[in-house]
Every structure is written in structure tokens, then in C-alpha cells.
Amino acid sequence: MTQVLTLISNTQDAAISNKIKDKYTRVLNASHCNWLNRNIALDIYFDNETPYEILLMLEAENLDYAFQDPLTRSKKLLIADMDSTIINEECLDEIADFLGIKDKVSPITEAAMRGEINFKDALNERVSLLKGLNVDNLETIFKERINLNPGAIPMVRTMNANGANTVLVSGGFTYFTERVSKITGFKANYANILLHKNGKLTGKIESPIVDANTKIETLLQFQKRGNLKNFETIAIGDGANDIPMLQGAGVGVGYYPYPATAEASDVKIKHGDLTALLYLQGYTISDFVDS
Image (cartoon, rainbow, N blue to C red; front, side, top):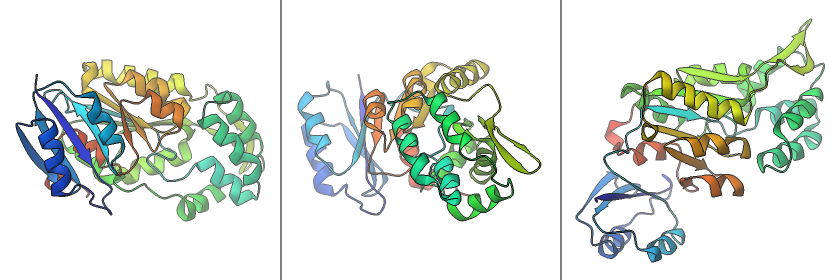
């Protein structure tokens, strides 16, 4: 059976040299290669079984990689985490920093993302510390502190342009997912609702809480709604609460993941940006849509 090995480099590094290409073409006795983006992303097609030693070789390279069936690599549904995945920050930590209490909140966030403490309990504890913040300040925080990760816009818009459904589902807050979705093009978004009264946060969130179960349920609902096979779905995230979603998707991608999340992922992105998801599907740089 023909397989494709996709190699993906950091866009600022361009680490896939002709030497790298020739090395893996030779080791795999490849039938042919295709540059998706010269020196940035490369497909290598081969017909043999994947030698175990090649995995050790790839792990030592300064690049990301994935082995796939070329006939099932195109995806029709993307489910994505937001914090530290689509955006560079953890929104709750940024709110806490604005209030001058990041030292109290950030360690709880880290422990929750590593899977060391219960996500719901950690969320409620952190949100309680935000009580009294003016709701208007959230706009300042969004504009001044929240940044898209590289490749977010072309990833979402290219998949949209090719008929895929794109869904943002976050254990964060709708205030941010709605704005990030509008900028990037996600067709739907789900997150927790911060409760407020008289223009100030109450320190509570509306039930039910969006958590790991919500993420996998969202994947399954949209898969069923689109009458899609599992291999037509892809999910991306970084934290422990993303693990069920990643394991439930046809391809689960850990994006600069925590150790437990990396272990649960089919593909790990540790060098490239979010356009890696397009290269995984066989898109070339000329296929990208960013406006």
C-alpha cells in the first residue's frame, strides 16, 4: 500500500534541504517526491512498510513529520482548541495579569494543562479570582494582549474554501472565541460564558462548563451532522483537556503539546506553524487562502 511521509519545517528555518530529501527518499526507496513548499514542506511517497529505524532518525531532525494514507488525508472537519493553539496566549492568564494576580492563576493553568488537576475545579477556582473586573476591560485585554499564532488565518480559510467545516471549541471564554472566529473565519465557536452584573464580572461562569467532554462531543456531533467518516476529521490542541478530542479525530494533532497530550497525538507539531495542518492534507503553498 502506498504511504506518504510529509516533512514540515519551521517557516523561518527552511530545514528541509536537498540532502534531507535525498536521505529519506533513499531510505524509503521512494517512488516519487513532491515539494508542497520548497525547503519548508515535502511529500515522499513510498510502497514499503515503515522501517522502525526511520522513526528514530526523524525524531532527531529539526522538523515535524507524519505518515499517512494519501487517499484519506484530505479532511472535511476541523475541530480546534483556542488558547495556546490558535492564539499564543492563555486568555485567563492574561486577564489575571491585567489584574496583577497572574502569579496566583498561571500555576493553576499549567497544572490543569498538564492534566495534574481537575479542569472544572481549576477553571472555577481561577475565574473566582477575576470577580470585580470591569467587562469593558476585556476588550482592552483582547486588543492589546491576544495574538494569533502564525498560520491560523490561512489554515482556517483554506479549509473553508475547500468545503471543510471549521469549529473552534475552547475551555476559555466566548468573549474571545467569538472575536478570534471572526478574524480567522471559523464557522462556529463554543466556549464558557463569563457571568457579569452591573458591568462587572461576578467570578462565576454559566453552566454547563465547556471541558474535555464537550470537545469530543462537539467533534462527534459535527461529524454526524456532516455525515462524515472518522478519517475525514482532524483536531488540534495542546493541553490535557484536548486529549479525548485528539484521540477521537481521524488525525489528532498536538500543537507544541504538553507531554501527556503529545503521547495521545497522532502527529506532533513542534517546529512548524498552523499551516502544518494544510501540508498534512497535501495542500501546496499556492493553494493557501489568507484573505
